[in-house]
Length: 274
Picture 1 (tube, helix red, strand yellow):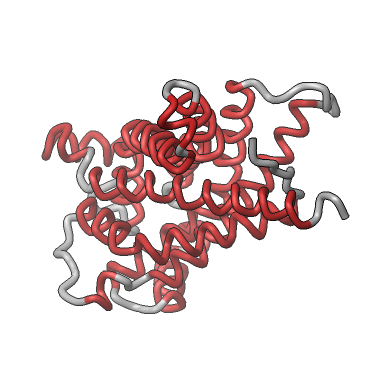
Picture 2 (cartoon, rainbow, N blue to C red):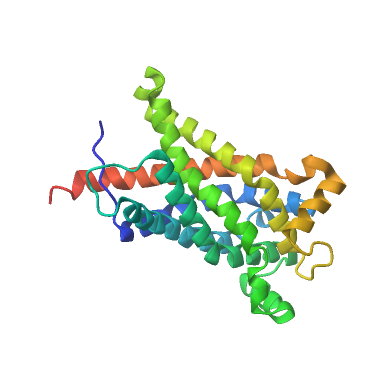
């Protein structure tokens, strides 16, 4: 078995930031496709359009992924209550990850809103932030907060809880997966990512519609957004952009998991014996 070390809070912050930047840079076109599909806008016509908002998105995802990892580590220690003689059970890992995701929405919800407004207004990060706060006030940055908290709790439970648990289970199912760790990690990430996407996409659609309609002309809140999208477009409307988002989440789980595992192995090989 490959030796791995436990990461400190500072190391979790650094690994989370690196993983968030990497996966956002690779997958920004999928993010743009998802947002434009949900908001009913035309697709970009050039590469600049597909990558518009990548700096804002990476700036949001990197610290939030870092924050989620650090908070998750703190919650895991709280659950163990100093008992180093046992490992976390699967439901404890998933519960800690859900809590970390919900807490992270304090940061993620306003940043997500700015990215959506930046793409809608075809402006800079500062321009989108200024437009929102001048027209609707600072409190408007938290429009869609509850929906974001639900989405992030399930999302974080996926990549920090369900994904690793599923990967270990898959490795024990067949010699091929036990001998090919990356194949097991791909399968585990896809299982957890597909599950997380399926459970959260209607909520994400409602959040995106709300945050794209700052004046509440069409969508007053998440409940009304869900109802209106369903009445106008059926179940398919609730999962608009779902394929792109599912692919993005599976990719994110795989990328972040690999960055975290690589950091743990590197620390074990180079620093644990010092």
